[in-house]
Length: 190
Image (cartoon, rainbow, N blue to C red):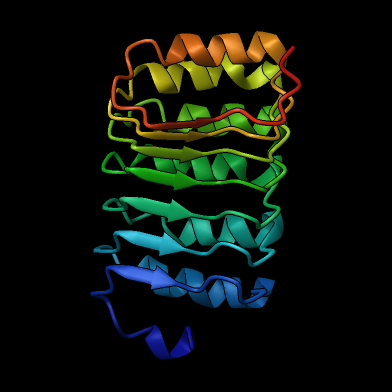
């Protein structure tokens, strides 16, 4: 399918979710992404891309700067692909919704992703759940939250933030008045 889309360059939404995309297919999708600079929404959740596939997708997005939504959830991209994804995020300042739950980012990966979000202030939804980011990444997430006063939904469940991490997250939300949902379930907060 991706091969058939190679000559189409005006796509604004691409969804290849829940397709168990192989590393080879990630190459083909990256080729489609690379010449669709009008792309606004990318749905690739549930594909088990792993780090190698996510890195290829990120390379395909190097010249795409109009993304408002990125969903790479449940792809087990791990910390290894975090630098490449952070680079994509850093030049997409229109980004409003970011879904990265279930990717085993760990603290180091979450810190890298947070660095990629430093200059983005339009986020309305952030989903970092089930990434085992722990309290070590809470400072960097706090910084992202503190300059995203349009944030409406924050999902951080299942990250072992503990009390120290939850306190930092709360501090980052002090000036966020539009928040309608926050999920800090299963974080070992005592």
